[in-house]
Length: 85
Image (cartoon, rainbow, N blue to C red; front, side, top):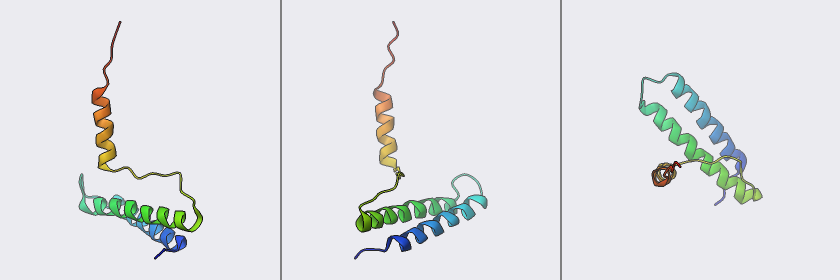
């Protein structure tokens, strides 16, 4: 079942607006409302990206990074060694 990209875009826009509301009402580091809104944006974006690709074979210039991407970058950084002459 495919989702209309316009509907997915509306959901993404709503998720972004909710993230703004949560961020502006943030109650310190690790606020669960901000975290939930963050993940809602990421999920809505992926749905939109999939719907856009399925309907029009197009993608956005955006990318969602997850913890695995960050961990891979950390491993690569740890493997680098600076050699001075």
